[in-house]
Length: 489
Ligand code: AMP
Image (cartoon, rainbow, N blue to C red; front, top):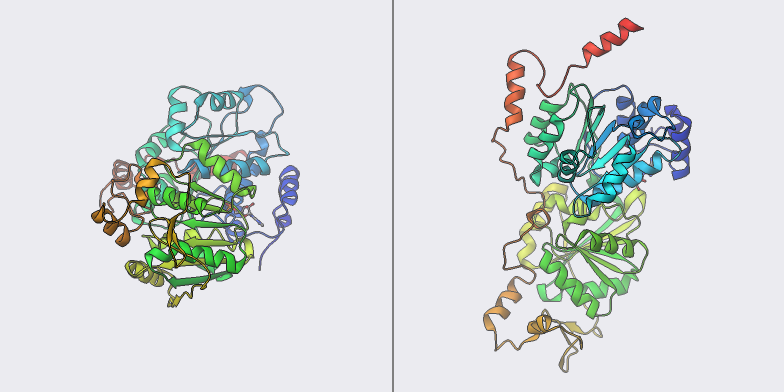
């Protein structure tokens, strides 16, 4: 049975904000996590973005902070009390936006800091005093070092998408940040998986956490119509055009596995008449925000993206997700298709499977525990064939699609005779880049970066303490405080 927000007895300003958001019943993670956080217990939650996780931690934390709420304009009266750490700028922005909405009718301030942007505006925000600080680890450390914020009054820490933070090597930054915080605090850790590294992190920084697991997004996928089409690598763009047309799709995400493939595909689709924007790790922060914004506003039809967009970006009602490249990591398939069919709405997820992708499809089959049938795709006779080299073959002649092709792009159209080795490589590995990726975070999605067996320094500290019969050196037992409260009562 799902319960209503009205059962929670939230403070009036929070209840009003929730009502205004149109939420009626709690999602499973909210139902399980909110009461536990309200009781002041640590939480280890297996939940992904899209499950209502943000409200699951933000609402009870705001509720607990209401006792400090004040209308003073003095920054000293608004110290950072809750710190929410996230792996990417996009996620940080998204979570901060939600926190702002939930806290809208309170006097609790919030701010977000992330890298890739001028520190000054963020500094000004911090100096005003904020109770809830949402941050990516690197930029937060910059602000700590610049003494723009002090974290000695932090009572609540949320490590959101913790697995992702470890995957991309944020562990040392997390350790440093956590070392600046009071040891007496409530810590909430959310992660898509409970890998051995995550468990180690939890044992070092969480105290007797309540474990909460909600159905993985495989369940959400039940509202998504999934198709796996067997398509030659050279026919993928043609297939995309055809399905968009047949289904009369207005907007879609198109996922690729590399930045180079992303930029190239976006360029090609744009030339083929689709309003397209690319979202990948080489884009500046401004460009990324602009890309997202124009997609949200409906100014572009297709958002071609790498997996940076797969986790977390909360763009609702995307009617379709195309896996132009089958993801290297099966988990990413779930993250990708989670962009469609959200909140009970039906969606479409189409994967184009070339012969070299079959192994990756087998991995997805294993993860979903379902047999995947590869479907053939019949091409409309009247649709021109679009070759990998960016030409349209209308059956009579080949012609260049773009008149305004740049010198760089035009080299793609050279006759095969001139560069046979290049042509061959492209035909067999159509969107793979030759150069080593400069930004492994975006291009090598979610392969564990930390050796499972390696023992991090903080674990050693935890063990030493365990040997002493106590908890980790990084946390202070909560029981004593509970006893103190009892004594006072
Ligand atoms: P999250 O997993 O926190 O990123 O939330 C995903 C989306 O679900 C966001 O757009 C939220 O506004 C929305 N949402 C969160 N909780 C609820 C709820 N109880 N009912 C309806 N929508 C919700």
